[in-house]
Length: 292
Image (tube, rainbow, N blue to C red):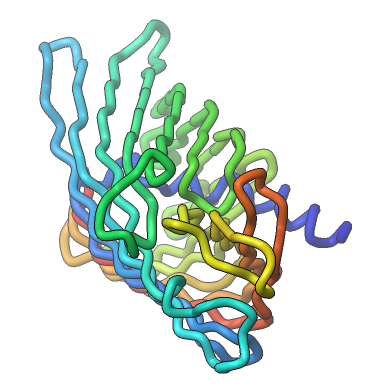
């Protein structure tokens, strides 16, 4: 337990420090095989953001859509619930963001994301399907040394459809300390990046991932209890390869080891009713992004 808490603290920032701060469009595919567990996980995701400039002072409104389809493929037939109710989940967020420059080189960023997260078995939405996310961050770039730029981001992030449904700190310090090397330190998230060339980069990383969703009309568990929420949370770390087609278009390929992976069915009061066997240690992800 102590090791898992330490890993959570070490990696808690990385998921958010890379969460759409600069992405204008993104196609994302995640795969966790069912080796060593009872369930296989795939997630297909599409995101698009459109910035609207408000004035010459650098104020912008950001409008966007973030859609995910999550599919769970259960390995065994003998489960104490109807797996057909838990195969597919839809996550849809509408992004409303705002950013403006502040004094002394700081910039404010605010984002609000109302949306839905549901298995949609009832073919229509209800109030339990509705979720919201929000972020408030302050950003400052330090460019006194053009060969060694750095950036600091501090703030707070909250989401009802990610794997961790409580506010998390958002702290990230980036610095390029040599022509071919850079790092990103949080409190205390860390990654290390090697710039092989303008097109090829390698990164050691740690991150949070997962999702939380409503189960429409509930799912009967063990014949007595009704699960209304599914929650998957994981902590992993691994190697990422980046290929930069241009300054704005890049492909990320990630292979990681899952240090912690939990998939739980919960009642409406967030009490755990059943934990699905999730001992798979492999994690693969591919991301094609167009960024600022």
